[in-house]
Image 1 (cartoon, each protein chain N blue to C red):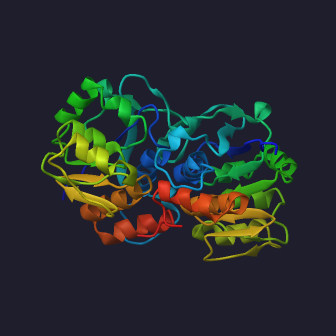
Image 2 (cartoon, each protein chain N blue to C red; image 1 turned 135 degrees about the vertical axis):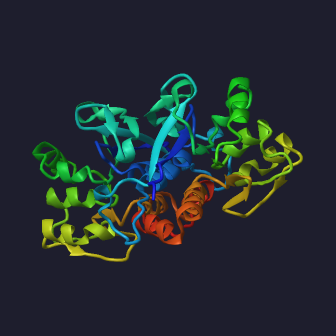
Amino acid sequence: MQKERKKNVGIFIFDLVEVLDFSGPYEVFSSARLTKQSTSSIQNKPQAFNVFTFSEKKKYISASGGLKVKSDFIIKNCPALDILIIPGGIGTRKLLENKKILNWLKLKKNVDIVASVCTGSLLLAKAGLLEKKKATTHWGALKLLKKISPSTKVIKRNKYVFDKYYTSAGVATGINMSLHIIENLYGKTIAKNTAKYIEYKY
Amino acid sequence: MQKERKKNVGIFIFDLVEVLDFSGPYEVFSSARLTKQSTSSIQNKPQAFNVFTFSEKKKYISASGGLKVKSDFIIKNCPALDILIIPGGIGTRKLLENKKILNWLKLKKNVDIVASVCTGSLLLAKAGLLEKKKATTHWGALKLLKKISPSTKVIKRNKYVFDKYYTSAGVATGINMSLHIIENLYGKTIAKNTAKYIEYKY
């Protein structure tokens, strides 16, 4: 049996990205291990995913609260994506006017798994990906999501929604969504072990 | 009435710090607002805390999974601390042999609030802060905590423990602990509003 290539998880970061929106999925995907046995010694096992951050043009990003992060790649040299994570944060509002990013997102609509966290769904909506689809976002942006994409069926009170694309509710629910994606790919045991490692209820 | 000075929350980061160990508290403290009314428009209100990261000597840190973070300060020029957060991660094992860091931690034992996340408590233990105190850590490091500090009463199954110092269990429980610290300082409503903003059960 041929060993499956590790899936690439690319997390898009930008100025004023919400810290937990990108760091939650980063933690989940980078601490997942493909072992049936739960272990705390994850550093002795290979990562299940190849996780990296990328940004538009400049690598130095100032996240919410001022946290300084340096992306691994910029769009131009970003490796092929199997899973694309679009976090939210107040920085999304500026990106809603960034035609280059919206066009780039449109081109990414056929990546195997596209998943937004929090107000990251506003970008998917603006790029047209959520037309006539169910989707969610942070509770404070539900109306804005509907305004940007009137044909979207906006779901309230779910931690995440799947309708061709994944969208999660606010901030921490990106962790739930990431665990769910892992469950869909590798089964419940692997997702539960990951949740146990990070001591997150799942 | 004199307006209270904003409390400084310093989060210590180091190579192989666990991503969610430091980013969880960062998210909580930087999104807290001192308003009785719950709001999603937190960017229109001043932050409740002045939150920053700092590292030992070099500013560029490679966290778990390879996330690249740049600290705001190094120890030498770090502002006075009201709250000191010591995250965990496999990088703590190397710091357990770093006498300069352990001596520095000893000098910080009188900071108003010292709180470790996950295996950050191993550092507090090694610096002697947890002698004859109750404390916890990640479930995979409970025995190691006891070994480092035999007089510590190691608590299992609590999300966090307070006995002069705060210590939390693994990774995500640093979020619970941070919300609890905010509740102790500013009351339940402020903590609940912060939890609601980040959509974390509290």
